[in-house]
Length: 280
Image 1 (cartoon, rainbow, N blue to C red):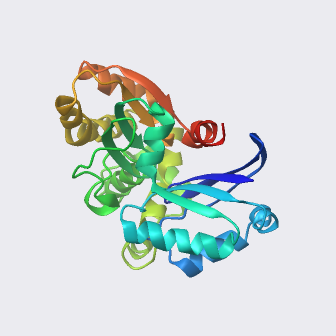
Image 2: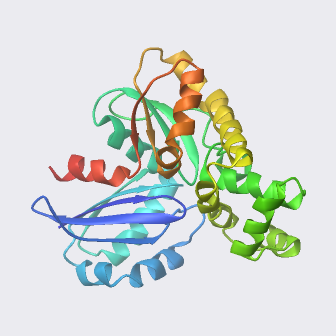
């Protein structure tokens, strides 16, 4: 049995296959080694009966995780997984590598990630090119779901949110200023809290304020990530991966067209393409 896993900071998607067929699947909390320690990872795994029941049957795991960006992080995560899946060989790569494989397989291209976090890189068919992007939710992640959550809350807290949106936000999330600041600055996993407001963005996608918020976020993302990569690798096909790219596709396409760029593919769930690649 083979397991293929794609994990952002908020959610990890698991597919278990045997003889090329999916025999089980589940979602768990996100497994990002920058934010969750080995003990917490094991607790996450033990909560899923599908994983507990198949732990000894899985012989190989391909795990693509946000935060698995250094050899030490990869090794630590692989060791933790190996202690749960005792008979499995574990291969850990970062989520950018997984996104690139899902979009391009073994062909070159430029891959933009827009999910709970954001990134962009040229992929030569074997590995993503190193760059200075990927600064995380505090210093970077423009255009991601946690970025939009941050901008939404900032407008709410500074009283710049239109009254109708403010009323909806307070009603849906029972928000108060002290609670928001406490949750962000004094509680763990502030990035997950910020990401949770993305549903509010999509639910109000037609509102003029939300449209402006999205367009400004995507423009920053293109200016900081996409355009420098395109300039360095002109003529390469442009792909996007992630929930934000898929659910805000119309606004993303308009931003690309503004810069005379054509998006080749948008993939919401990269795990499906990774599954084809690693189990065929």
